[in-house]
Amino acid sequence: MPEESTAPRQSPIAPRAIGQQFDERGHAGAEHLDAAFVAKFDEKMPTDWGGEIAALLALGVGPTSTVVDLGAGTGTFAQAIAGCVSRCVAVDVSEAMVTTMRARGVRAVHAGFLTYQHEGEPPDAVFTSNAMHHLPDFWKAVALERVGDMLRPGGVLRLRDFVYSFEPGEADQVFAAWLDQEVAQGWTVHDLNEHILGEHSTFTWLLEPMLERAGFEIHERSVREDRLHAVYTCIRR
Image (cartoon, rainbow, N blue to C red; front, side, top):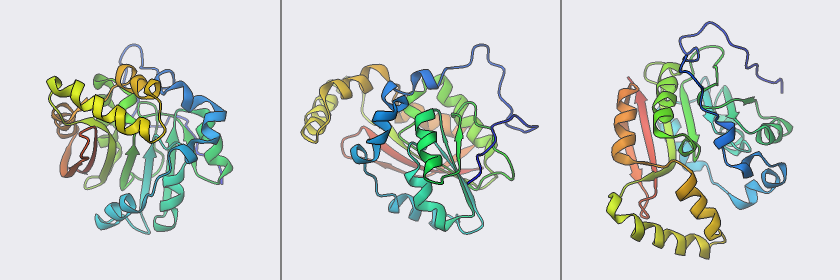
């Protein structure tokens, strides 16, 4: 599979001149940049993408469609949807992840939410899973606007991530329950505290106005019972 070019081109989504650009790679989580961790990533984070693919197909994504996966990890989503679409471009800031994807024959680009430059016709859908929480809220808003600029009108954004659907005063209770549950499934307290203290999950009541201001209509929202995860299906106006 030929490598995708990341060379800039004339485009309505040219990078913004916002002073010092946020270092996505430096905030991606050190483990995601480590080849040894990446080699075991699928074992630690097994995912059935059937529901995500079904949601996109139900909204018109199909054999002639182009899909962009932002924060693609090891490319398992790109592999799963490849037979349903014309083209899937998998994008990640981790060189180790990109190397793994290319070894698997996935069309992969070494870039992030703030630097990816799409080539060709606007994509019909953008998918992102558990990646946007690495961006602080200011840069989330910039990233969502870039995604909106990238998509064709009527295109789909499917976003799943750590998103908080509780009140700030409930944080201790919610996090304590999450720590008990996840440690029982093999994660460590250090892993989970690293997410809480060092990453940038957003409240639903902050993320949703960002989506709307970026030109999206929220078609569907699903919040997991733990109130720490949400899935959004959005349509580009």
